[in-house]
Image 1 (tube, rainbow, N blue to C red):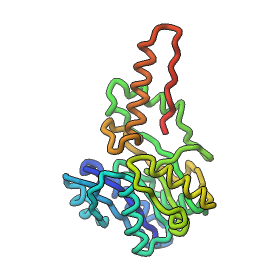
Image 2 (image 1 turned 135 degrees about the vertical axis):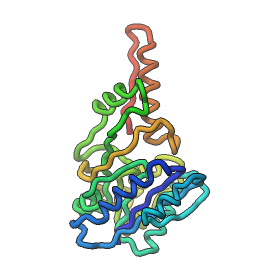
Image 3 (image 1 turned 30 degrees about the vertical axis):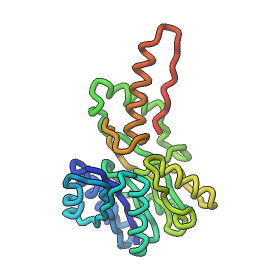
Length: 239
């Protein structure tokens, strides 16, 4: 069985689209009928995220931590207890491609780090063109990239257990897991083959995450253009 864990904190606006895309990936003929189970971890949700998730046929687990590392760990553990041989992770504001799971497994590695794309920059208003161009120039959407995204990861159950699983971190839990996987001797593929599209929302669910990185890029740009002529400022790349 393949397990998919989705952490969610008040995601009623987007969880159905996320789960529809995951359902398409779970039914891909390349999986040869292997069972796929989806668990949405409701982390301190006060909206209808859970209702929508259950209506889409996903399992749910509720916690009150407001901690994405713990949410991913709880989801992974629930799936391991159900017998998952492969764990895939994405986010509630993300839509995976129909071949997402097949592409992860095709790499024949202990773990896979994929890339992300952004379809709609308009939540950033007048700064949307700036961010789109910044992302285009600085983000490596190719094989052997350097990115690590909890929104596009996969790992074998055996490698996950050897690495000790997700740490209960408020951010960068994905980076910590990959570091632990490498330290344990796991073969980690960094590939642009597994595709996902994520949101460019302005309201960050986790401090230090993707949304924060985008906001930071805008702030750095605005500071740069306000400097006197001749003073250059560095705009960091989006993780």
